[in-house]
Length: 382
Image 1 (tube, rainbow, N blue to C red):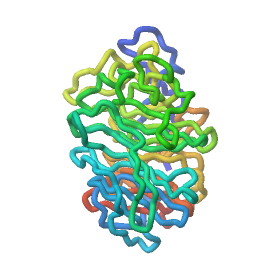
Image 2: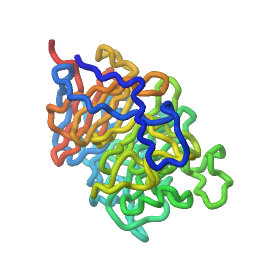
Image 3: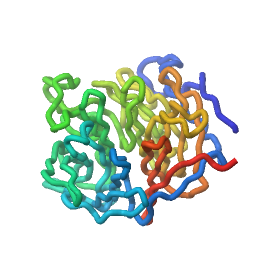
């Protein structure tokens, strides 16, 4: 098996930067490895889904799955799909919008609370929102909106959005820049292009980085993001890791820290779709470099760190779904840096929207198609 090793390949392309940066501070560029066939394959778990976006295992082994048009369903052990659950908030299912992520309350066995992110219509346009409700046999009850992106804007793109509970019970919500409003990712008075951190009930944690600061929304954790559609916690450190879409090139892997500015649209390793440059270059004082970036893009979406033993040598790897060109990307990390990249499942020819580890130790992915599927990833037969 061919593995491309990346140690020591920091990209020295800090054009337009305002101060010199040493090589260790610059991002590592993906070498764009060829896909590898014959190592893993897939088994269908559920079919007939319409643009599924996220999956979440429940303690009983059943799977919650969101469909972007606005439906939440349950996949049973035999692969059968429930009827759409009631109680899902009204979503704006246009363009990239709709029902997005799903997450369980950390104490779900007691609370039965399910959290959803979605694009919410309202006065002024549309915005990313998050709600929670108590799961019954037929749907969600006592549904409460715990977060609304402010302000709402016209347009159908770049909503994010992933939900990640931390070890202390707080909730991260990732958001996009809303596409036509990218400059607002740098504006701390607005929610676009931000990661926010809330308590589980939607209140603001007292230790958030911008609490008490004038001209800043107190829920903000980090800013300067373009469109974050993947987020997960490191299994050992508990730290947040994310992936976000670049424009034409410049997809990023980041480790967002509180109060930090990740640069968009002032700095980026991508270009505009017209081919013209964006912003000032690739680096600027006071703005963070990505850990890793892709050019050409992989269009990264759902992600997870693998902690099981079903795949030889994969323990501790970061797995990322690719929408374009498709497939599954595996990164090996050491001391917070990417040391190798491998790509799998290109042969199935589908957009992988989400990836998670099941209670059986296998990886599960969901394919974003009008006839979408939930698939189990298994080692290929020798």
